[in-house]
Amino acid sequence: MKSFNQNKLFLTLGSLTAAELKRFQQYVDSPFFNHSKRLSQLLRVLIPFAPEYNQTRLTREFLFEQLFPGEDIKSQQLREQMSFLYRLLKGFLIHLELQSREYEQKLLLLTQLRKRQLGRSFATEANALAKGLDSSKIRDSDYHWTQYQLAYETSNLAAQQELRTYDASLAHAMQHLDTWYYIQKLRGSNEMMNRQHILQADEKIYGVEPILSALNLPDNPLTDIPAILIYKEIWFLMQEGKERNYTRLKELLSTYAESFHPSESRLIYKNAQNYCIRQINAGNTRFEHELFGLYQQQLSSGLILIGEQIAHTDFKNIVTVALRERQFDWVEAFLKRYRSKVSLLYRENVYNFCWASYLQATSQTQKAIRVLNTVEFSDAYYQLSAKHLLLRCYYEQKDWDALTFLLNSFQHFLARNKEISTKNRGNHLNFLKYFRKLLTIHERTAIMSPADSQLRLQKLSLALEQAKQTAHLGWLKEQTSQLLH
Image 1 (cartoon, rainbow, N blue to C red):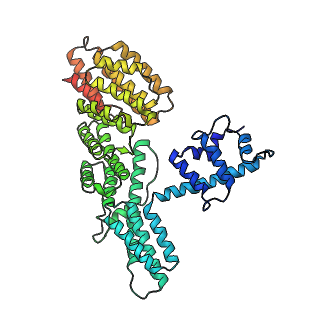
Image 2: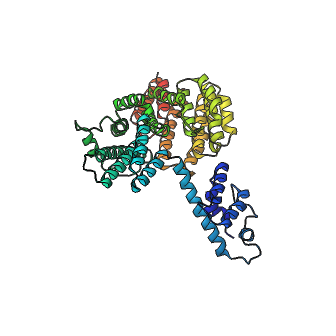
Image 3: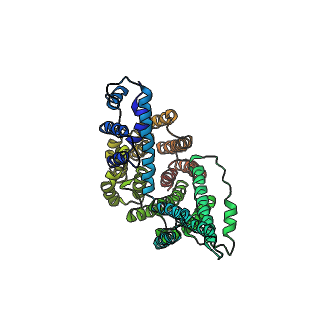
């Protein structure tokens, strides 16, 4: 028998919260949406099995008996009832989404009022919507899309009434449509370019140059739109990688911080962070302070939280950069305050790694080794990070035997783990290559002449300066520099 937990009705029901499930029951019980008492009965039978819907008792025989007592089992009848309930569930999800979109509800009302030729009511509702938009500080793409639809509906009403007076609403509609398109095109193109940087995706990007050329025209009214200014700067930042673009992006973020919803502000900050990370990976360690500052701004404003949760990647990155800035007391307070806000799926992995990182950074190396050797990391990338951290601990203790064993196991881990991307694997293999050279020089310092040792270190330092696609490059440069001096 096919497992019910693979059925699209039960999978979708399982995604509902307890409150949503209660509202769905009210939705199904309403004669406005549903006239079938049998569907209400089916839902009542299913609710006790929430949220998994995979208990042993939930069989086709059981469900058919509840809906058609005393009748011979007919699978087609049961499938039809489940299909009808799923159709209601899809309608309920649409209803839920529409309830969260206040502007769209008002625009749909305007469409109905226009179609019914209720011009006075249309004007009242349109003015109320326009005032609501003007009073909002948000100036993102959704704002301009709503303005476009409002102006377009107003233009349609004027055309419908066949008034022989000039109506500017169509011109306003086209201006907001252009604004919306420019924002969406720049934002989407930036995201595609970001994928190219991270995933080495070979995605062609077309149509940005005409937009940039149009924005350079002296009479273009869209030039000073906050979202366009920011996404244009991000485009140049990723195209050219100039620090002046990064500085300009920070200035724009500060100036127009209230022009975006939190979710969009987070994405904009992410672009600034990614630039800092690329600079750090290239050995420009002064950007660690910049990155820490960006995270502090988001923490103080609450932007870093999605609902009440913090992404495990942000949690890890914040701790990592704060430790590099030697903000030890700050990190300890951060770990205590935000640990419970990480998703349960990643909470133990990220906390244990960050705690071990804190112990290593505060010269409690033996405790850090104990954490790393006793905790089992379930995520491949946390395993990777933990091996790097353990390697540093052994290096600090000059435990060459343990390091030799770890290097071999690290190499095998990279070779056999299929969860690690090709790019990441290459970055870490390059790290191991350079680290082995550093380790060889370190181990043989006692038997090499000072001149020979310095010559080898100079060659390694030069190789690191020219190195690309290498994990933890800054740390390698730092350790080499310490031995050179």
